[in-house]
Length: 336
Image 1 (cartoon, one colour):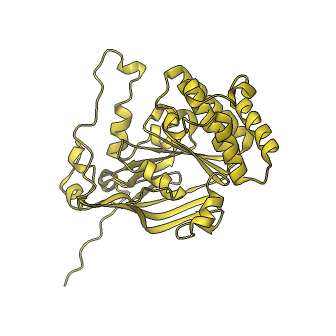
Image 2 (image 1 turned 90 degrees about the horizontal axis):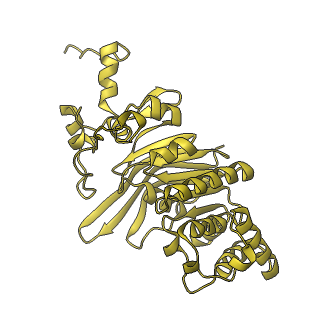
Image 3 (image 1 turned 180 degrees about the horizontal axis):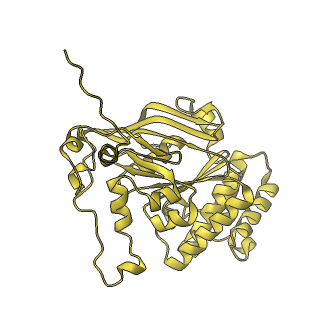
């Protein structure tokens, strides 16, 4: 049985302007010890998917339908009492900006101990020792001294390490990392990713890595989900996504990455702007920005098609390719 199973998840935000359908029919599974990457542009629904799993949506947000099962237990509609036991204890999250996630008026030690006391049976002395051990685990120097300091006394990389320590303090089964290295410089980013990979192997937890950086995905992830306009457009192993992309949006993302081969050449950005989630089209939401779009792309959304055992994609170009190579045969209309 999968550790986490998300099935046909729909999440919307109900605003004065109308219903913003931020997540539209997302389905995936996550096994123990695996790293799942969720990639896409800003506004593609990556973070809202994570917040829906944790049920920490804004007051205007609501899970409209779908299922989220953790270790076989249904979380949608489970209630706040159940979710308090899940959050931090079973599933932890690292938010994008550590400075806004830490309270500037409390010491690092107090905030770490609060999380441990809330989710475990440890007393204050045990919680203090655990907090010091966690700071040491994430390579924070002089942890006893750091326990007495405030967030503004830490660098960005050190604050992110504190957030990782807080997220791992209760030994969760799943760690959700929402853009954990975006605000950091390249050197510190590499250190944070190495740290997460080492801790994942040491603790055996599963990770959901939310990012728009495909370089991070290549380093960290076993499986990848590519999201656009709240939907999964492609899903597969990291090797399949990088070496055999089968959705035009995924190809656009890959083409926009600078490589050694593109030195001195102009990058190929994806033209246009993301779709308006208040007015979702009938067809493929990426069609207005797609250079290969056909008439059917504007009128009807393609069902996700099994490319192979490790790969699925929802793009009409796969149907076109299948017809051309004979792997898909269109049935003749019956004579009346």
